[in-house]
Figure 1 (cartoon, rainbow, N blue to C red):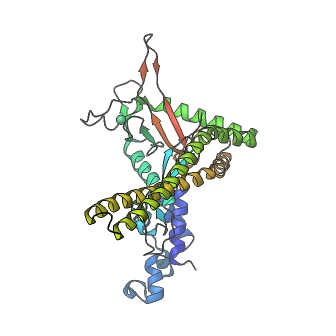
Figure 2 (cartoon, rainbow, N blue to C red):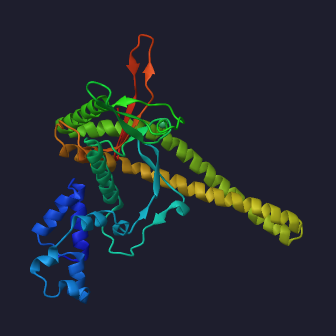
Figure 3 (cartoon, rainbow, N blue to C red):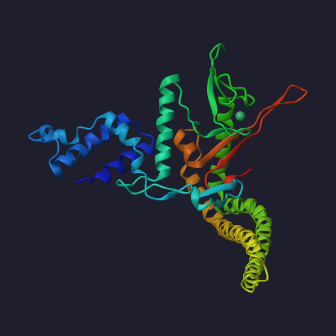
Length: 358
Ligand SMILES: [Zn+2]
């Protein structure tokens, strides 16, 4: 018998694999997974008017609407602290802890079983499916493709005037009367071909020589990491030294005040100054420690990404699942036209776990 938390997990598991609500509903019915309503009746006798004496099928009479609403239920997200880290550089994916005030916690009020990551992915898949129904085309890049200049998502459009209609993206801060950013126009087929070629390239390397690829990923981040590490170590030393000094100054000032060598007014003013500096130094020292610890994470992250990459041997087409598994975001720069009329455009792919690699 499935318990409450298990049916939720099952529904999200199926959704993450790209199943829609209708398909999930069919599976739940086929596998005779009891509905939450029936589980409650079974346990607490609620809604006996519906379930008492009803045919056995009533226990697993799932509806599409029910599955849809479960997939949107935020309270199923796992009890964990989110928003803990922000990436200061995608290249080596150094994580910097945000100050504690910026953390937010999803409390375990419900039976929390779905990770934030799975939940977000499912929302993206639902959104992309909705868009597909509307314009007859899957928006596989939904949520992934951003403007390199303003950071907003690129919006999808279609040129239907053309004999062969084609899709394209443009910065959403440029569309709908907003002219706050430039167009950042890129054709869908151009973007598709580029991203597919990059993934095919990494897939080939992951299969051919995993160790070599790992080394290459680590080297790319090493160069930056080494210089950053030196800088951080120097900063840490300086901050720690100053903290000792300030602590000493504070103690001395206290002595002076007790001995009547400085006025109450000066004591208050100085003590506020020293205390603020102490607080700032403490925060700085803590952050530097955390940054330096987080850098050690890189090797494990690179291995994680290679393992994911290996799941997709020689991809021949892009799907929302493939893109969301491997890619964190894709940024599109404004195209540059050269004098000879050729058009050049930079597209950056930031991979999950490892960031940008060339
Ligand atoms: Zn923009």
